[in-house]
Length: 69
Image (cartoon, rainbow, N blue to C red):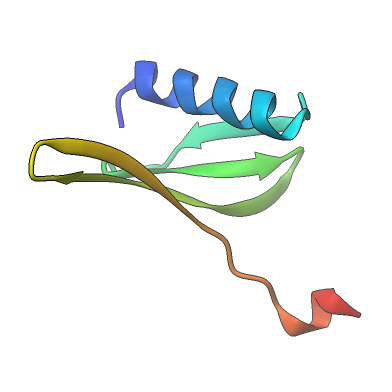
């Protein structure tokens, strides 16, 4: 993703969840997605989706069952 898109997504996540520790980072060798972190902890991947002239971003987060205890 372009740096401008990453900055906008970073601001969106910080504003939406009220947490300045959230950070959107570029992925090495990938330009169709970026990653979301809380401090040093990886939270998930944000994919760019362009379909029929409309642009959206999809956030995917895996939750391990051991993390639920």
